[in-house]
Image 1 (cartoon, rainbow, N blue to C red):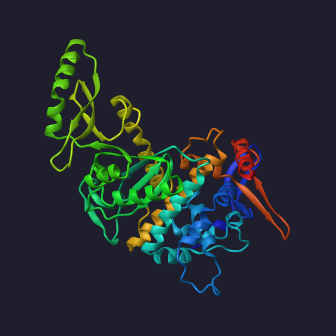
Image 2 (image 1 turned 180 degrees about the vertical axis):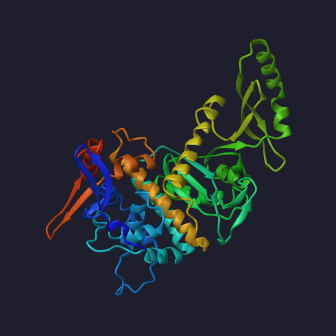
Image 3 (image 1 turned 60 degrees about the vertical axis):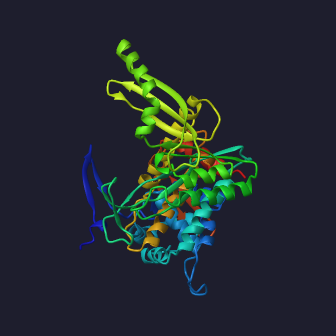
Length: 437
């Protein structure tokens, strides 16, 4: 293949001036925001904690790249939009990436990072989930009174011959079925699973481990578990009741539940016929399925409009009015779905193209850790800016992808950012916020 990148490129004229271009600009980078990621990482110690959690069978006297450097390189690259390991063939020579990681020489190559993924063990990915929880605990400025844990599942489509690859009828594809747990916008768990299972499988065990660690840190904290109807399982509900954990969980519709609310639905139908306006009610009743050991409180949201009735049900052990529990608490669980989308789409949490299942789990965990890094950037540096509620993709495009020249000598590294970047004031505010102790 000819070396086209070294040639001269012509782009016409501006007035009398000929427009020429080449790739001889020198030590330039397109990722000026890497310095912000470096500062956040140093503040929270994420890459150091991840490196300490991963086993390293290499001969420590022979290695060139420290585990922390490899982890930081991979996390920073994901945050900046480099989803494939092949990108590191060129990225390892990027002067700004080298500076952010803390090296003055070439970083890890694509094969080096590939070997890191392939030697993943179950103990590694379990330890990385602990890192997520510890990062959340360390991020709290004060002892919280109440924590709401959102548990949800999603799919990771598969297109190769991956281990444990199975077809899932609901998603109509071969996929994995990862389990996520969030508290607010912080991710606390990411468990990769095969897809031909109950969507709630492992949920009770994961919640138990998380709640035990949270109560170890904050004995008096009140914990509430929130999930959709796929997690309405007796094992999880009974454990919550035994451990004094609140829950508000969706309940799938069935004939018995419809009989419980048919009186209210008839009243709404009459009201709709009279005025033509959509009717809405929130009521509660006691209910016990055959598999339940006792009746429990069920809250129902009823609607009747042009398309007929549309009931929804939740089961809970919490106090409060039905409206408070449904509108004020349960409906907010949709935010966790947005966070899953951000992890999977913006930070490439669906790149499960390795053959080994555990290697794919490590890849998904790196995306989860990159999400944590971006989330902490939002909290620590962008809280009072126009990017305070921006997604990871928006932060990347508007703040991290900045042209920069890097000048290095024996005494100083100078980073010259683009003078006319539109968010230079936001960058300055973020850098100052991260510089403060």
